[in-house]
Length: 128
Image (cartoon, rainbow, N blue to C red; front, side, top):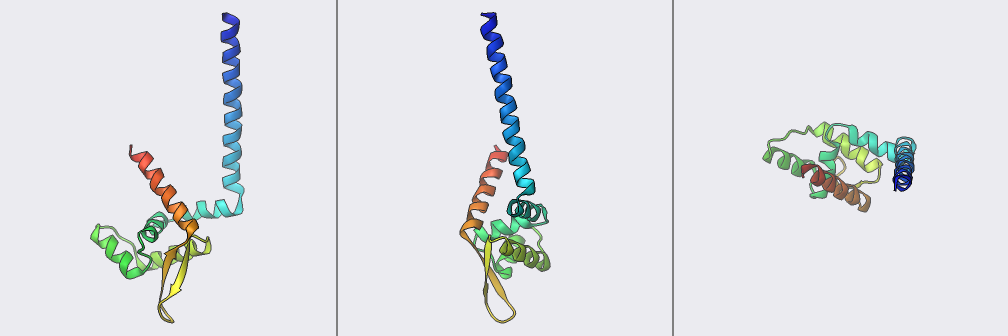
């Protein structure tokens, strides 16, 4: 009986070490992979998540984004909006569509939609 408990305990320790190693490898991959680290850096910036969620709501035009943010007593400057949208576009989460020679709006890509849905799920989990 005691031997089986010790064996189970050792098995548990080995499994935990293996899980920790896999987790460490995942973190290392996120931090060193060019594409993943670029997305991580972008998400760390002010209003990046706001802009991805605005794209998800089809508010990729400054006028619509500004109206939505004001309606909810939130702030987002036009300069920040434009900067984030260009970064989001560079990462393939959105694409720009010209309105006229000086103006454009942004639409979410399939990849951007996946990221937006994951962010929504993430915040749903935290809210529990």
